[in-house]
Amino acid sequence: MAAAYVAMGAGAFVPAWLARLEVEGPPTAQRPVHPVVEGLWAGVQVVLIAGLAAAFLVPQTLLDFPTSALRYSSPALAFGGVAVFVLGALLGWWAARNLGPMLTVAIETREGGELVTSGPYARIRHPIYTGIFLQVAGLGLALASPLVALALPVAVFCGAYRARLEEDLLGSDPRIGPAYRAYQGRSGRFLPPLGRA
Image (cartoon, rainbow, N blue to C red; front, side, top):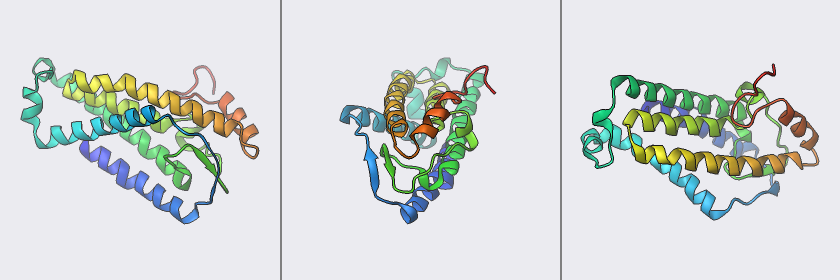
């Protein structure tokens, strides 16, 4: 899981951010995120990194932790959790690679920005959020950790909040708004739409 997380960051997110620095124009519009939501979202990332680091560096501490359910878990659950986590990391990697220089942490549009509808974005509007949800769920399963599992509803809440802001911003953009609204009709927010090719 740690290798998948590092590969996702180094192989997709870092190159996308570096590419963005080369072509970045000034922001044309922004949507501020409530500071509490931003703090919770950052907390989800901390849970992921801390859980991976603890599993890798101090596995016995995880087993002895008072809320750990690892002693009651099974290899099948652990491997299933690893598979879900790796799937989330792969989805995040694929999405960031497709976004390239359009990747941004802030909810904003910029001069020269384009609507990306390739790769996972062909069917899902927010695959990076979906990838994060899968990583949190997978880590919770693999570590049999109720504490990590509690981060999943927080991640979904924060992702849904941020997704609504992004969709409002892109849908109201004078340049790409009509195309984005049409794209919303043929894609799902976090999962591919059912029953539509």
